[in-house]
Length: 195
Image (tube, rainbow, N blue to C red; front, side, top):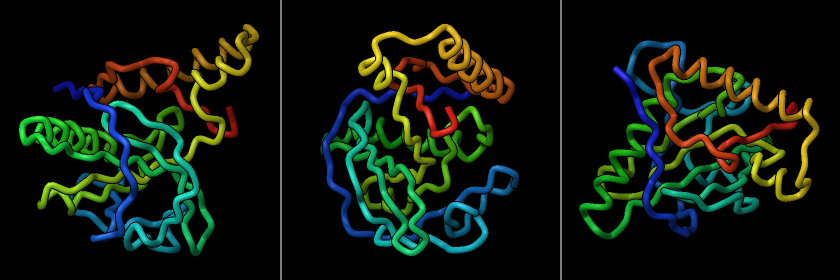
């Protein structure tokens, strides 16, 4: 069975509301569907109980289906990206976006590769009342390939080769898990401090 990560159809601007429930970490090495509190960076020391544990630092971008913030854990000072997906007022549209976000969360629980952005946890308890959905993700300090192309305009062949190799490794990993991304583009190719 193949899984698809669909791009949403509506970009939204939102602010992060006060926390309402604990974040859940889904261990990719476990086959069980149970969840536990989200651990920070090392994944074995401190637990992020709710959104108030995270300090919003900046808006990283708006995209189809949500807004991404740079956040810092107040106790450990670890930096993450917080992807916030807001479900629209239109019930039909909200149901579709909620289904896509839930599907994305299920896929992210399975993924564990250095070539795919890591998801540390999903806040999904707000779904019961039609609230927002939150993904605590690995922070990619260098931004997207699109950001780099805007500032540099040209890249060396060795850089292009490295980017292409990394993208292909990520796709090979995903395809090996029967996951099809369907939205590969420069703005979705994120780069960390290691390149």
